[in-house]
Length: 443
Ligand SMILES: NC(=O)c1ccc[n+]([C@@H]2O[C@H](COP(=O)([O-])OP(=O)(O)OC[C@H]3O[C@@H](n4cnc5c(N)ncnc54)[C@H](O)[C@@H]3O)[C@@H](O)[C@H]2O)c1
Image 1 (spheres, rainbow, N blue to C red):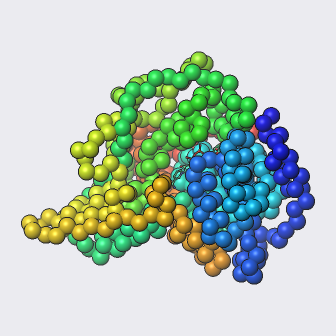
Image 2: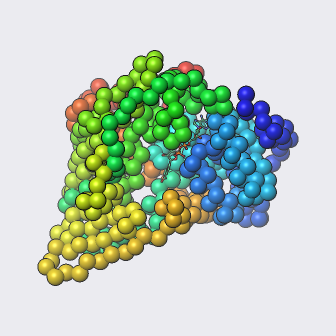
């Protein structure tokens, strides 16, 4: 296997001689100037390296280990880390082995969504603090189990919702909360992109460097095709929840942040694949299976929220293709991404107010540095971080409840305190999923 490479053999040998401090003294060791031992699961991936570069720049962690089921991506990332720090991290393909051998203080989990819960919980049980990517879980039950595991372990879990701390989001929220747009009666969140019909892709033997069985993990062992990995997993419902699960959580989170609400009372979602075409999965070929558009409505006590996405008909006519509009009795407030925020007053002659965005990473347009700094600060100060696991859980639920209603083809009531759909066994069954053995659904 490709995995038996120079760097891995060297690293694995090094891994066996580790002897370090116990997780319980993270804060002290950090205050005493000792760096936190950091590992990354999904370390060969795009976003993991974005976070890791930020973590190395922050300077309070040392990257001692990377794990990925793709040996090629793993080696490229390990070389990148060596280029930045002068030190080659140990490399693993099984996160359980990494957690056992490395005694990590901090772990970044940036794998496809269906792995977030099991890996985060394993890290917490191994005593590490976790920076996990959104969405928290692939199903609501997994996400709830992550919150419980974090509380039981007494560890910090930051979810990668960098829009909770990005400068224009913070100032825009202040504007809204100070009543700048008046009383808000409705919010519309959206993400639109260009696209067209999807031709099936042939199934293939997984590449030699990829441990496909471990990639699929608790999900069904789907035939491999080159569109899934890297990055394409988002549109395969075995591994993720399409655009609503990917983009939806960022913007629905802004709605919960603004309103202070924890959950909606009812949800209705429709959508399908009229443009991409029917989902295909045979032993010869496959397409993705996430909807190419969806519209979800969320009922709250004193406002209505709508989510819509479309993966076709990209155009320049609509002013913005991603973000959310808050409709108030003083005017319309747009919270955007690369277009910052803008308030359009209803009053004739009123002044439009605008603020440009400010990104720490212009290329990918994100604000991970302040989110990472808040994460390590929270560890040192023994407090909850800004995008605590419960915050991420509630925002993830928004996306997952939409997916649940879409799968059922009807609306659902939501008891957000008990996290059940009252008196609706058919719907409650979708709060969890069957796992492929030997993986066990987290309690
Ligand atoms: N917060 C944000 O704005 C933001 C932006 C992009 C991506 N993300 C999130 O980051 C995560 C990764 O996305 P990506 O675009 O980098 O995907 P990617 O496919 O580039 O990376 C995922 C990596 O995980 C690896 N992997 C799969 N199963 C594994 C396992 N069992 N153990 C170890 N590694 C495994 C894959 O081989 C791959 O290298 C997703 O959850 C995504 O939602 C968040």
